[in-house]
Image 1: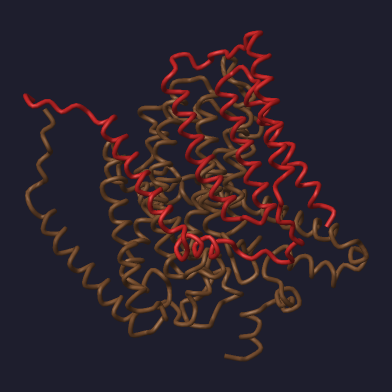
Image 2: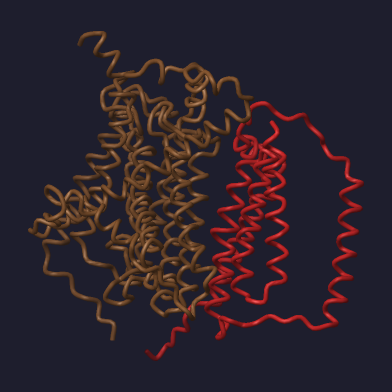
Length: 416
Length: 170
């Protein structure tokens, strides 16, 4: 490849991306402002820092709501094609402007607050959920320096912030003063609190391997050997942890097959039944932003983050690759949603407490032994052993499970 | 940095203000949600002490865990969600007296404690590794393990209390 082209592809805007020592977005913007906007450079340092931070905030607050705009349309189109339909076609070519039209509709809708409800909490609840979904994006590395803050406790911060969402859900459900809302909120809270445990334990498996909570360290640890150094393939246990994490993440964002909190046939719409107009739109945006966020976290933790498939080669700083990985995971979530039926409450809790959590504990034990034996040195031989075990495991699982499903249809446990 | 004290005072004000709301508001659910602001602001104060791990733990354990438990308790046990809390005349006097005494005691302790005053660190180093070493490589290992055993006993006790009665004849 031509060196100039390669240089452009890896670092397209050298004067913007190659700032010395800039490891996060606000530093990047700060350096850029200092060197390129002369009248701002005369301002005192704290003010300039504040401007840079605000600029980064504006970037995220402007970009993140655009994600649902795209994801909602994607969801409708994916679901349509899975069900042999065409989906929205009227607004714009192939219906691409449908979400925009829906957004305009939601803005003009009446903002209805139940008279018997709790007005203050009703108003505050959507903001809590919205703010928490946004705050998660602060720690997700989109590229080498495309990151709001490389926190020392990165992934732990994400867990902490996303655990606050529950409070917003309960608040919304309670303030609506409707039985559908309250039941939905309680279901949702029970579900999120339960599934946080397997999520935390599978994250712990990654942290044990990387020995750091920093998001950027986790990504850096997955470089060098391209796709082979991705944490998901590094040990058989992280391979399992990835699936535990992804299943629990689907439950955490309340999507089918785990969407009991908003089961239409039982609860109307769950905790946001009473919300209308823009307040409902906030829940909607938060839901899709959450979906993107958990996929981005899964991509960062297990699928190499912004590190590429080929060693040492990141297209445009790795950001497009990262977004593609994330979008693939989002697509899998949609695929699952439109393929599988909803679980019952007892099945939901059984899956979490009797399967995912014991598997996670086994994983942690396994990772500990693996790191003791192989020292986590990213040795190709060790990754080879890991891949061999993974492939044998998949074949074994296929033989065992395939045998079971080919038998006569599983007799239903007689409950009477 | 002139910004830091300002942000600190905002957090301090939020902590105290929301704590006052917790004890004065009549609606028990409002009190619980106000407690969320208190616990969150305390996490913010931990960040000022450069205890980032502790701050996140505070949010996970108190906001994501204990507060949810409190809300569940409030919503699922009392039949009347809108239970109004009222204070009797006498309570104000005795409560105030006890509060002043406790405040005086705390103030005395705070004034007499030789605090470790330290210059502001330039860059924040993670405290995670230090906490891990303190727990696993020092005399804190035994208390840590004992605490986990106590939690396990509490868990088993909770399961024992809440389990369904299984009858022999069914």
